[in-house]
Length: 363
Image (cartoon, rainbow, N blue to C red; front, top):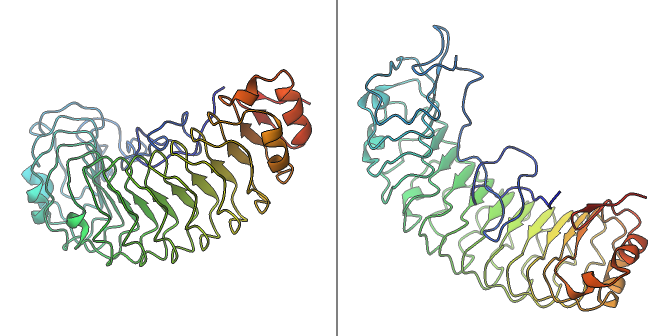
């Protein structure tokens, strides 16, 4: 089958774990925009489970409002994904035991009433993915929040997260209209930051996020990789579909295991010397003319260099001689992939290869 890529949280869909669908130019495949349907804990009927259930699952109900839905006072989890809600039900605001709530894929525009949520101090997960929100209320009352998702809305800045609790570990703001990375100074526990599909031009104001392990910046307007010197725990980085012309600024990111740089304007493979733990390197859809600069990547398993400008097989041979650990390689879309002995040579040069382009290697 076609190549698959580890999903980018929130680029274009719903993560189901592991590697999710074929890579796209937006920076990858998206991740779940909040809590999955909670059918395992709810009985599955609209209105909640049995008398012992503390979860209310209304996933996919297409409800315009909750007037006919019974909402128990002790409910702890509510999933309202894929309904047609335009306003927050007053009964939701009065709940005091709520820990997780998702409004994924609704029609909310005004969420100012979230400031009145009685369970705000206990809430650990708030998901507002894919609505019509332009403004967020202050969130300083949400003192236990660990996951906040406001992806696929109409926010123009990151100011709404300026007062978010320092307990937040995952912050998703993909597909808004954000032009600048800011308002992160008070989030020392952040491990995942998703800002894909925005209007960001510069990587900045990241230096205090020393615990960050995942940074997703695909489909922006970034011209250089920078500001990562203190992010020494980073394991996944995506700067796909931007305006990069060179690979730089990664020297201290020695824990990186996955690096996605496809759909840019790269002309050389460089700046990877310290990334000895790198396992996945995506350089597809650039302007690369040869394989080089991989000498120190002793753990590299996946190399994606499809749709570049490697004219002959000799442009691959020398660079690949240093990476005997490769299990998956993509060079389709390069002129050299049309050579009659293309497959035979790659299999010869890469003894551990299990997949070349879309074809499984059988030895």
